[in-house]
Length: 196
Image (tube, rainbow, N blue to C red):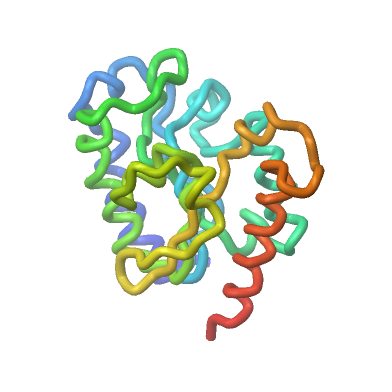
């Protein structure tokens, strides 16, 4: 069933699929516009597509994505039911390097449209690149993760660790990145449940 958001999102997606505003439009296999379910409550914004995302045209489908699904599932979130997922970039940078400022600028039209159309109440900023796209700070993600920030359209934003970082830090001891992520996602669920 088509939602109120589907038409507006599909128009901006069509434009994005034809985009060649930066060189990544020439080197990508697939444009990775979004995943999950369009809704006005919860959005996750990642950094940029990796190899598997570029192959399948969907965000967070590799090992990091599988871990993200498990983390979300631990508190009852599912990309089939209640979270919309996108990235700051819609095309994969070569060798998974960080997005360049010009690439982020070229893609900002699409990300801005996604946020404006959905106006989510909660935005999870997944990883350093996503954080720096929305929050003007010199602090690293370890210093600001788990804290709430004012976001666009009266949203609340929380920086969270990128799951690929968690894959490299396997400890679950108190204070470890995985343990901190568990605290953060429980807090997100708590605030989500208070939304009307």
